Image (cartoon, rainbow, N blue to C red; front, side, top):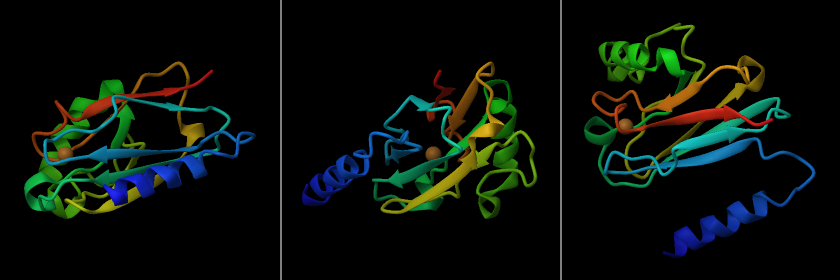
Length: 149
Ligand SMILES: [Cu+2]
């Protein structure tokens, strides 16, 4: 409880500089195979965008690991399927895959990680998805990524 309150306080402090776009987001994942968000909106004035992934559960990465992978919507299913084959040692992401626009490593309960990517890679005309490529997770653990106007 105390930790959560402190974290919320920290977040509100970080959100204060009003003249700059907020070029980061924190996404929580848990032992129930869920993210706490279905949509991430990226301000197109951001040069780079950072996604911080938290795993607020207790289960180890081998049992309930989560990552955060960004692709075009059309590439989601194939990248997730091929990621399974890539295995845990590769964080369930096929190496050197141009369809993968960004991804974090796989983490377990109590861990956190982050990834920063160039916003210039994204087009406002394209549909993007984020998902967890841990085997069996992407059908539930997914959402939409949009560029703001
Ligand atoms: Cu997962």
